[in-house]
Amino acid sequence: MTGRVYRWYDYFISSFKSFYMKLAVCLILGAAAAGAIVYFLSTEEGKAFADKVKKDATDLGGNIGGAVDELIKKGKSIIGNAEEQVA
Image (cartoon, rainbow, N blue to C red; front, side, top):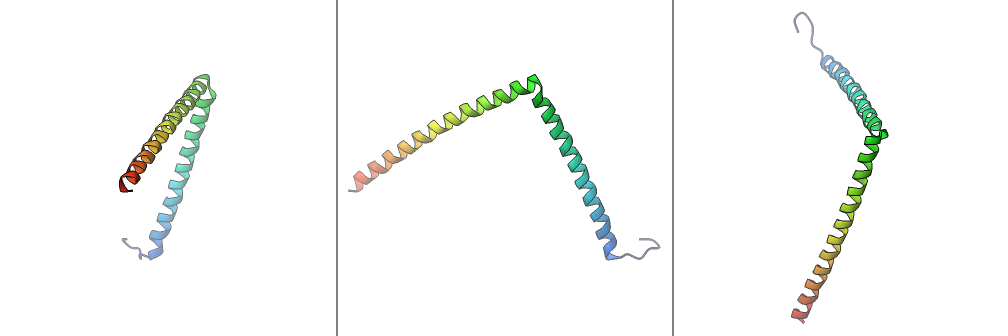
């Protein structure tokens, strides 16, 4: 601040400019990353990767569904046993 009068809005304006600069850089990097991912998924290797991920997600979903059903059955049996003991 040598030879210059400090005004409160000087800082505000400079930080505002840097905010938009950061925003622009983030948007450009995000677009570049999205483009790279789309390009990869459009290749044969990317399609095979996507199919593998879909298959693994389906298998995982089936395993989780079975585990949840088992837990529900166990919970019902525990509650039923507790009701019998109370009665």
